[in-house]
Image (cartoon, rainbow over the protein chains, first blue to last red):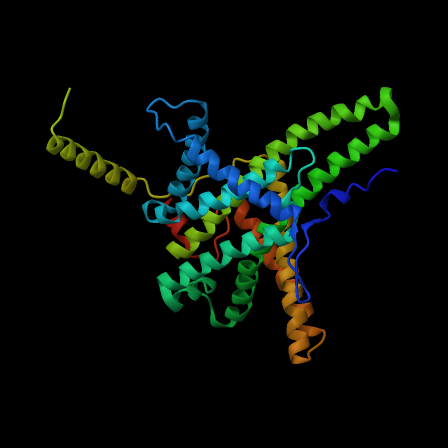
Length: 242
Length: 112
C-alpha cells in the first residue's frame, strides 16, 4: 500500500539511548544535522585550501557564499555589525544545508521540524534581545514606547508592540518549517499519483514533480536567505535602537 | 614592481582609510531588500499575521489562568494580537521591515 505523504517526517532513532525517562536517541534528524555541519565545514575549508588569487570552481562557491552574507551584514548592520558576521553566516549555512540536503532522495529534512527551526529562531531572538540590553541597558525597552505618545494610549500601544516583538521568533520559525513541510508533502503526493496512475499516465505527475523539484531548490535558497536577512534586521534593531 | 615593506604598509593604511570613509558615507540605507518572489512575500505576510494572533491568544490564555479573569484577557489580547499582526504586515510592506516603535518612521519622513 502507499505510504502516507507525511511519513517522511517521522523521526526514527538510529542509536536508541535512554537516560532515565528521557529519550536522547541519536535519530536520523541528528545524523543529517551532523552531516550538514561536516559538509559545510569541509566546503568552506577544503575549497579555500589553495587560496588562489584566481579562484577555481570550489573556491568560487565558498567565496560567493561568503561575499553574499558579508554584503548582507554590511548593508544592514554597517561596520559595527562585522562582529556578528560569523553568527549570521553559521545560521545561514545550517539552514541552507538542511534545506538542500533534504532534497537528496532518502535523506531527511531537519528544517521540516518546528523544534529545530524554533530553536534556531529562539537563539536569534535571545541573542538580539541580549545584545540590545547589553548595549543600551534598560533604555532598550523604550523600543516599545513611541515618543510623543499620549499617556492614555501607552498601555494599548505598548501591549501591541510587545506582542509584535514576541511574534517575531514564531513567524521566523513557522515560515521555514511550513515551507519545508508543504514542499516535501507536495512532492510525495505527486509521486503517489504516479504510482496510482500506472506507467503510461504516471508520467504526467512525474513531469510536475520535476518542476516542483526545481521550485523546491529555489525555495531552499530563498528561505535560508530570508532567515539570514531577518537575523540581520533583528540585530540591527537591537544595535541601533533608532 | 617591488615595494619595500614600509611602502606597502603605507599603501595598505591609505586603502583602509579610504574604505572606512567610503563605508561611513554609505550609511546602512533602508533599501528595498526583499527582492524575493511575490509568493515568498505573501507567505511571509501570512505567517506574520498568524504568529501575532497566536502570541496574543496564548498570552491572554495564560493571564486568564494566572489571574482567574476568564475569558476577558484572552478576548482583549486576541484582538490586540490581530492589530499587532496587521502592524507587522504594514511594516514589512512599507519597507520598515520589522522595526518596533514608530521613531524610525518620523525620522525617515524628515529625511525626505
